[in-house]
Length: 480
Image 1: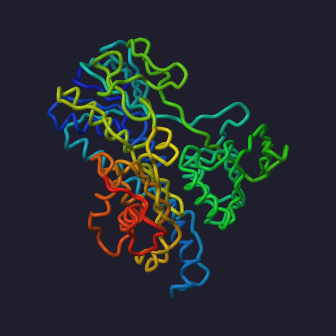
Image 2 (image 1 turned 135 degrees about the vertical axis):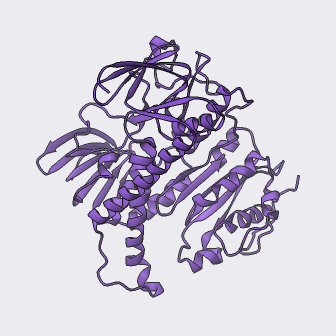
Image 3 (image 1 turned 180 degrees about the vertical axis):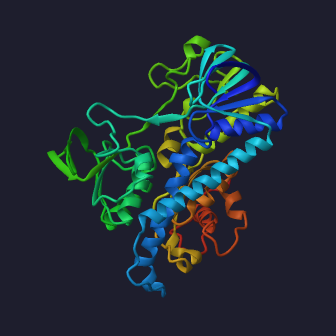
């Protein structure tokens, strides 16, 4: 589209990731004219370079691990099972293509016009689109939704180069597997992809600055994962600060400092995963009069996702934490409905989170520490998967689920779980918290048998002092 053009639209959506494309679809459903601009692929980071491709590879590695470790015990025998990286990557790409095509079709059916390119605000009601061929186009709009996501952070001396120092995107497109990998950052991406690499034969060392893997999650969840990693041969170094990186032909040398002093760690490559920062630079915020937090980079929004410029909205990772696709989905709907004049707001008691490691980790609501800090008379009860029939049948007895409740009111405050498929039913606990359910409400809800979701009911019964499949020491709960 070489040349200069101009067009008008009702709503301009900048960014086709989870928040952006959901907002565009909802706007279309509401009968509004909408134009979506995406500089890369529809689906954004999550679909193309994050959530979906990583889970595809994690699934493949999990199958290999299961055949090798569980198979012989339960009668599934295979001679020398191995991992074919090229085939796994091809399958992963096919998953991405199907999902991306689905998003494209949904946008089309909703009447959304999609343009490829990079959009930048030039005023409160205008933007400039730069197309891949260099052509420029002015877009005038009545309202806009900023959904530009986030990008990986780095720091001097440790910049990714696509060779020795890799990003998550590089890991998800590896052509060959290295023999060893240092993972700098023990957050979600570092743990998920670190375990994937370990299970397909890479010697993995995870280096984390803070005192536990997955900083910010319940310490019991972190401890459970750390124990599994150590059993699988993953070296875990927490409370360890990286101070220098040397890149050489065929290897990297990372100098770290921990309680014991300074050490050098060596591997073929280093995977840098130390967080993300909102993509709010070079977006034309100043020209449009939109404010953001100067320190974090997040665009300031209210409960309807409005910025300080009332007809410009922001959703997803660029708006506020947590940086989760399902949070972005909801924000996109709220912004679209607000533009359409509907009564709506981004209001919630809690947002669930899942880490796709083995064991799978899931949490929603308050931890014991958080509940205590908020003044609750908090108490927790933990039900082990080892007492669950479904877990034995599925050869998945490691793990547990714990419930945090208020001992005075009986209110359910939080749930944390480590084990098979816990991410598939954590939203039930989220709904219970949103509806101000008591622990007894959860205990009285009939759960299908045999399923992993029964751990919710069993843990609730245990909290009440009325368990059936474990022995209670004593009844200490009160019925409100």
